[in-house]
Length: 304
Image (tube, rainbow, N blue to C red; front, side):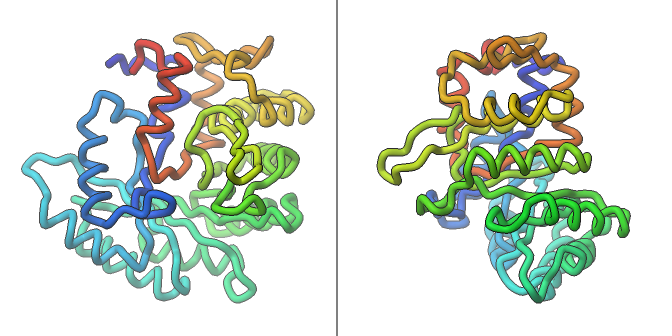
């Protein structure tokens, strides 16, 4: 395995946060913990980032993982998903961080806004787990995205906190999938605000493709990645929209020096900068499926 900083490493290093207990996989905690351990010892472990856990399941995660912890096992980075009230979730996160660090440490937290919990309140609650964690606020694509991203950006800046926005890219129903326009606007506004972001749901495959069962087009994580890099590189929004909408795998290439979409070349250094300030990671309940597709389309090359 080669870990020299090339376009492939810049594009895919730590890109996938493992969410095995979430649908559609919905593994038991012991199954998800064992699968995460297996992935972390595989040749492609460099593409994996955090283990994602619901706040309400942190106690279970601690019990299962520590009960089977192996000598010399590297520390785990944990992402906490607020699935209960932000006060209760924060309290569980604090207890987990206090009892488990440094063997398992919370490095990020994610939450959706509600009328009772605007971005500022959520960021404040998440920061009580650890002031240095990255805090991500999920947007609602049914509401003006520009206003939401500006509100999140302002709340983070006022508090001096790390983090950004989160985009839900699908679900179990057709209505859960945002349009090409929604995704493009999100990427454009996040880039304009220099805001990192995460994505989740529906991103098991690298390239946008048709799901006949749900009668929808599923977004691709390579589409989103290179569209984000294009935003940061100053490409026009029309180009960003075309990259998000692309369905031809052969229109993309990712090599050792650069990635490309059709005639647009994006150097590895530009991808690395954009990963730091833009598309930081996406959550997936399955790692093998996206990895196999990356290999099939030769996006990993011999860097795997």
